[in-house]
Each structure stands twice: as structure tokens, then as C-alpha cells.
Image (cartoon, rainbow, N blue to C red; front, side, top):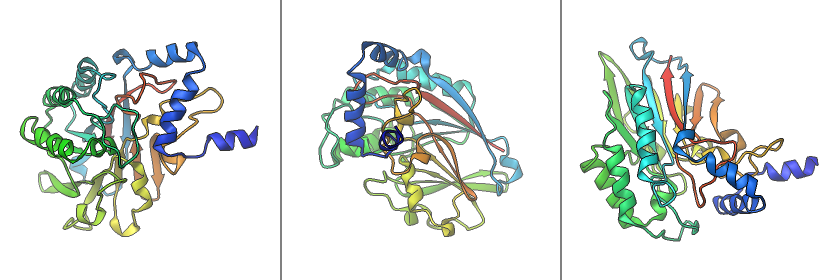
Length: 300
């Protein structure tokens, strides 16, 4: 039994994660029914997460960040689901909204060299839903692996439509400064960890004394972060929290190399990482004991 649990707990590639999702839930109608109900808009949970940052300027204490991730706009995740998630986020009256990737993607082909089939309607749905997201300090996005798997033309269009139609800057290995009075914190964003990320470029010209919040779709970026980067907080998605959590066993598969980064808040010395379960779902409309999530982070 110990060996069996050890096997199930091993981090696997996204390809095996998706195949495992289909395999596990193909064996039981009850599991499928329960899993489907977990994907409904009514099941989206607002997770309110206080995070203490030692270097945070006093004027930023109480600063609220809404995080939406892994929306996966597709035939399986419709406009109503996206709108409901946006409504939940806006109801929290955040100071800042961050979008941590995987906006589209809905095919079984998952190899990084494959190109997803793409229907522009799903991007239109995203732009319309996310275009309503307004916050005093703005809304910023980074790209996920599925956004790249849709091909370079789609990636370019996604960035263009986000920035010109929805007013959402996409942080592709760059940073912006957020000021409150004379105090400031820096928000940096990188491309997906499986593609064209450049951490040093993203952190360029940020003063060492500044609080740094990094947006990275994949939490495995923590494998590349050095103490000298002085990153205070990483906000990620990618994992869906496992999307499936079996009784007594937990998630049988993980698309990350370190199971610590499956979901929730992780402490690495002075650096913290929050991994959201995400709003949407992949391949089939199934989540099991792992409901979708809108996150509200309060810096304290």
C-alpha cells in the first residue's frame, strides 16, 4: 500500500495528468456525476488568503489582490462561467487584479510542439468578460502553457486583444511599479515556465529594497528563483489543485515537479507562493473534491 501511494503521489507530466483524469473518472458513473457538479459556476469558491510580507510598506497593508487563473475558455467553460467568476472577484472590491494564465485551450493534444485547434469565439468571450474587470491599481496578466500551445498567431492576438480591447497589460518578462504615496511595490510577470520565461529580464531595474510580487503561471519557477532575486511573493495557477482529489489518497497526478506546489500557500524561507485551483477545467468537465476558485489575497 505504501508503494502504491508513493506511485500515485509522483509528479507526472501534463500529458499523463490529462490521461489520468480521463482514466480515473471513466471507471465510475458516480464519480463523473460528482465531478461534473464540482465544475458548475455555483461551485466556484472565493478563497480569502491573508499573506504577511515582512518588507511590505505600511501603506500597502490591507492591499487586496484578486487572482483569476486557468479560465480555459472553451466549449467546456462558457461565457456564463467566466462572467460569474469575474462577478465574484469584483464583489471583493480588490485594489489589484492579476490573471495568471491558461486563458484558452480545449483539445486533447498536449505536447508542447502541438498546436491547439482554436475558435476565436472563446477569445472573444474572454475579452468581453475580463474587460469588465476594473481595479484602482489595474489588471495585469501573464501567459500560460495552453496560451502558447494555441500557436504564435493566437498568442499574439490574445496579447493584442487583452491590451487594446480589454485594457489589460500582459507582462511578458517585464515589471511595473505600483505606488501608494511615496511607497512602492513592484509587480513582475514572466512567460510560461515551459516556454520563453526570462526571470532576470522580468526583474530588471527593480531596486533590491522593493517588495517584489512575481506572476508565474507555473509554480515550478520556484526551482529557478535564487535568494539574490529577493522575491517576496509568487502567484501561480497551472495545477488546478490536481483537479481530482481522491478520498484517502488525494490528487493522483500533478503537473508540477514538486507536490508542495499543488495548491495553497507555500513558504520557502522569506518567499511565499500561492497556487490557486483556478476557475476552469481541462479536457472533460470534471473536478472531484477540488472546486474552482477565485482568490482574494490581502497583504498584511
